[in-house]
Amino acid sequence: MEKKILIIEDERPIQNILKAFSTDAGYAVTLACDGLDGITAFHKERFDLVLLDIMMPKLDGYTVCRMIRKEGNTPVILLTALDDEESQMKGFDLLADDYITKPFSAPLVLRRIEAVLRRVQAGEDGGGILTYREIQLNPYTYKVFVSGKEVVFTAREFEILRLFLENKGRVFTREQLLDRIWNYDYIGDDKIVNTHIKNIRKKLGGDYIETIRGVGYRIDTEN
Image (cartoon, rainbow, N blue to C red; front, top):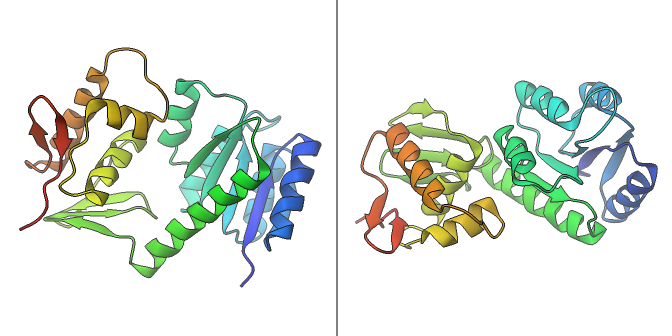
């Protein structure tokens, strides 16, 4: 079945490029020129994914993303000229599925769309559920359960835990975690990683994440 994409973008040239490439790739595309029109269009039909600009009139992308998340788990990819850490963290804390900064390559956007839709399909099929002892993590719904009880994580905490569960037994240094999760060359105190690990351990309520002294952290393989 043809996948439906809602593109909410106020710049017409970018709208037209994204529509052309997405249509050529076989997607059915609906366009909206601002946040208010976007959320109105979202309510009219079911979409498989939303491409969402952040800086828009009437309703900004953060507000639209928050409204979408209150109503379900439709995948959202943020498009923005804001490439600073704070803006990206805000997007991921709103549970956006990806964050693409302008200027961007339209073919790259298509690859990111495909990757997000693959993750969604894996989650719907049940194949994407990650488990470890009492932990269950669903990358599609962004939910974590410990002994059957849901535990709420921030976007960064969730991504760190997912990385460990996808790579059981592998040790990650602080530098590798910064590069993978923060997605840029971090300049500053790498103890920010320690703080996130501490918070994850507290929320999990068990000794799941092992510290490898002088190296980094890992979740061990199950015996």
